[in-house]
Image 1: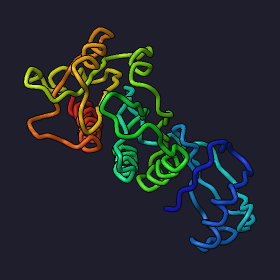
Image 2: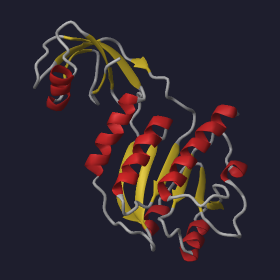
Image 3: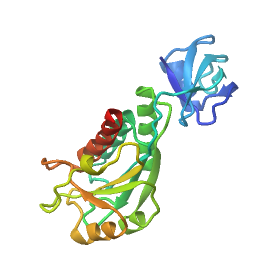
Image 4: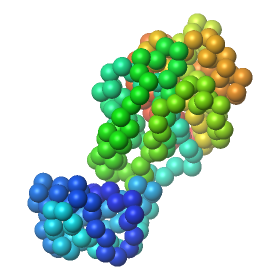
Amino acid sequence: MHIFYLPEAAEGAVMLSEEESKHAVRVLRLVAGDQVHVTDGKGNFYKAVLGDAHPKRTVLMLGKPLPGNDRWPFYLHLALAPTKNLDRMEWFVEKATEIGVDEISFFHSAHSERRSINLERISKICVSAMKQSLKSRLPKLNEIVDYEQFIAKSFAGQRFIAWIDDGVQTEIQQLYQPGADCVILIGPEGDFNKTEVEAARKLGFEAVSLGQARLRTETAALVSVQTIQLLNRLK
């Protein structure tokens, strides 16, 4: 099933972007009359038929919107400090999108190795992962901000900060309540320092462990996403 992303999708005639048009005609070799699917990234799929298969302005005829299967009664927000190796961040965004996450934020903290990210490139990876995994919803991606600025924001539901410390033995699955919205903080390779953890605790974040293994930043972030999704499926 060929899926195209069109955020302004609506029933009737629509035109694909030049990039998507080129992919449809030059790569997929689609011609007028071929059937495809379109997602608006907001929870809907559309059955569509190619009208004019032009490599710069392909026209599609869309049917009525159909709700996707990737809807869940909670909101999962994952925030992490980007690693020096951006390939790892791109890998995380791709896999988290495939598994299911609502929002991804980036911050730089005391031990951060990176203070900027290419959000445009990461967004493209996110779109590709959404289509590949047959998702109808595109996670929200946020620009990198200071750690203190991020934790001071207002969040709905439960708040967790994953911290590798001998004094933190409670694992996230022991505290998370299935069905609840949540935001989870994952630190840089050097982890959070005690001052940062205390600052988060004062704002309602609970320090949790992700298990006995010492995980890389991107692995810890992905484990968090999978854990929340699994706990909600098992409830």
